[in-house]
Amino acid sequence: LPISKSIERGGKARAIVTGGRSPELESFHPFESRMDASRKGLLLFTARYGDRDALIVWDIVKRRMAGRYQFTELVSLLSPHWMPDGQSIVLSGLSERGVSDLYLVHLPSGKLEPLTSDLYQDLDPSPSADGRRLVFASDRTADGRSGAANLFLLDVATHAVTQLTTGDWVDESPIWAADDRIYFASDRDGVLNVFSMDSTGAGRRE
Image 1 (cartoon, rainbow, N blue to C red):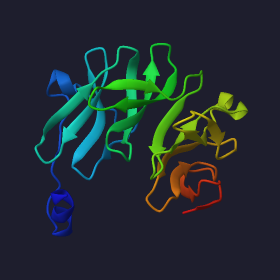
Image 2: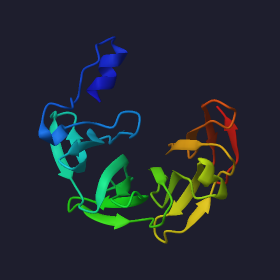
Image 3: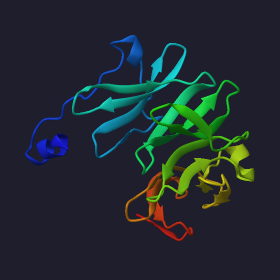
Image 4: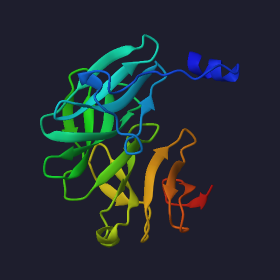
């Protein structure tokens, strides 16, 4: 992207989009929700619009909104991520009941497909390179009642969930990288550090 070339040449950073200046982009979720960009230059993020969040597809090159999606059943939308097919988006959605589940948004229709449906808090989904599995953070363990979170894998086709990490600590913000390793933050050492592992759970501190 031109932005990366500008950085390499010592260029100045520039704002891509600014919140709070229009009803369509009322406010963002800094430090709560991740963003994701495709190689086609389409940025995904969420912003408040009216009484609930909207999923925004922003064209970085043309500097304008390319799409906006809202869902009557979801109040808050967090950490949208492009699926490898470029035709769907996975995200975490908070219902009016206060429960956070994972969803697929099919483009361009905006059809919403639930991937999890339970009383646990499921956050920060990230797909494998082939799009067949997702890694996400959740409190769906016995230690979750005391604030712990671990990582889990979800089969997109069957919706089957398997546990990847185990412990009375917080594992969060997983990203399934191109080298097929999962990178995430964890406070298992007492402070947040970056760890990585493969899909079998074999890992290391980075």
